[in-house]
Image (tube, rainbow, N blue to C red; front, side):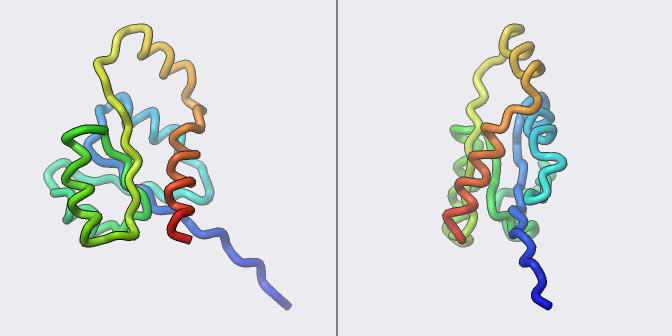
Amino acid sequence: MATAERPRTIRVLLANLRPIVHKLILDALVGKPDIEIVEAHSDVGAAAAVAEWCPDVVVVPAADAAEPYYTATRRYPAVRIVEIVQGPLDVYEVRLLAANPGDTTVVDAIRAVAARNR
């Protein structure tokens, strides 16, 4: 009897995100059967976090915070990066984000970049 092949799990590392953004992304990812969430501790460097967790995708804030992860991917070329733009939040943006916790945009981005390695 043939067994069904299990879908590949995408290991996602969340790193250096603003707390509210981190929570919203975490809420969007929790419960997705094809996504495993791992989190970098702030005292661990980018290369060490990538080496320790072997993620398929790293979710980081855009700009300078992402650069150490791009440097780490030179050593680990299978790792893909999703940058989250984090501008100053005003009250309207916080309300908008809080009203859309099921937004799949980040989930779709993670799945798309992970699919490049399959």
